[in-house]
Length: 190
Image (cartoon, rainbow, N blue to C red):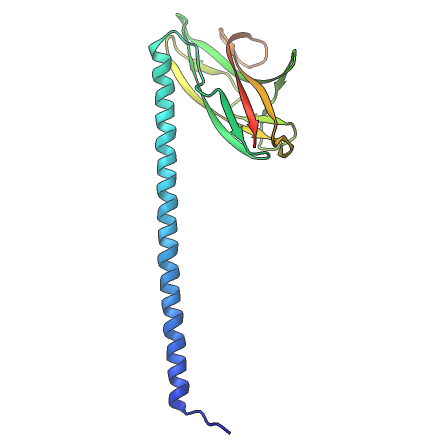
């Protein structure tokens, strides 16, 4: 029968404590590093978003364009969402109100998509944004972000969507206005 000494038991306990302390230290350092990386990624995303917004505004200010939407194609993973940025410029002499609509074009048919009042998924495409009229002074331009959602079944499909700016007048609500400008773009489900 082997006998263990108290000295050997104490040595094993001290080694176990040292290993646990080292493991916790490395875990803390690793978590700090990862948190710092995500913070940097978030700052980079914000800077990129600000750069895109500035490019859209510069594009609108240089010419008499009413709408600036630099993307011809948007790729979205099925069941996910993405934010698209559009710029609108009031080229009129007076103040105007505008509404943003999104339409799906299928052959000769155009289907208006209803903006979501809460984030949910019930159609192949939905969008979420402030659905009320947007005010622009004469020659004023602004950039708006729209969150576009796709159905999970949309993988490997391409759809044609149209962003339509309705307006030209003093609006109190959207829905009964004339088309101010529009642009089509493709949505690719991946």
